[in-house]
Image (cartoon, rainbow, N blue to C red):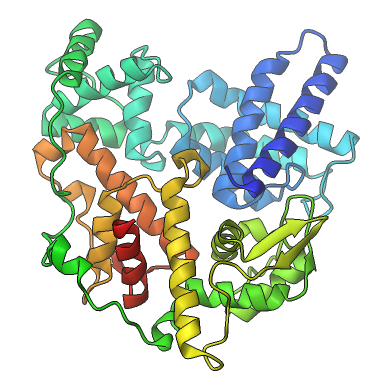
Length: 436
């Protein structure tokens, strides 16, 4: 977990702890534990999906998006819990106002209860609409309806094994509607658990990823490629450009916030230097911008930046930064070093801390993305039936897709209408990771 995520989590835990105490003080019979659990989910989704980490910041558009778009698409819950969301959020807003945590840039505190009241029916309607849910939410929601404990790995694996055994039409119907009135093979918990246990004793080899084109270059040939690159190749990479801008901006040192980030004014100026369009609502936090977070984390990992005593300082690092105009060869070495540090850092981290999810398939995808023409991954819906029946193969696709999209968000890759495109500079870093 990054420093920013840890700071957000600590803030949420503090607010929720205070809310629980406030709620019980007002009504000792209140279901405070259930309400805190609901609010934890809402605050986490608000931060992760809507880039709004401040628990006290609530605009009308944020509330509408959270309750009618994000929650139906991502949260699996029974209808009675959906019905409790708006009343719980109403009480939470009261707590925020009474404790002075209501953010000044939020909607009017007096208007908030009316906004929530008007959303009660819309929230239920959105939760009941299968078209607003993802296909996985529809599938898992039906599992919950069958009594599956979705937090039990064995139970979940057994249920997914049954789902994958259904006929194509039944799988499509379930994924699109969240319902299956009369399945040809009703769910049998015991049989499904036994089938999963048998598969665990006889795993199939992974093989080349089904969603990637066959490689045109052998590993041996790749290792012997001429990896010399011009400075312009690195200067054209958005990730490298932002690391350069960040180092130049930090200079002799800059103040950082309690969450370990640059302040709003500095963040806004740095975004401008990187050529990144800013939100019309204004800059709230550096952590809301992956184009800055990626270089920031990489430069700290590699020793180019150090945080101490409330300030961030520029350091020499393993390969010192020099401008391309001053020392072209030195700039190439620096560019290669930071791209390699980016990949090595994400490879070394656990998934929950921002690490790669699809390795080693992600490396194969990156090698193809860096060649002429880039990479257009096959869509999951176009996969062969036997692939869709294999949850491991579906997970491979999802892991690589997540990794590539993360690198796009950081500026290391480009994406245009589903085609991922790298560069010679990124290829050098990929080969370095392979050699490592």
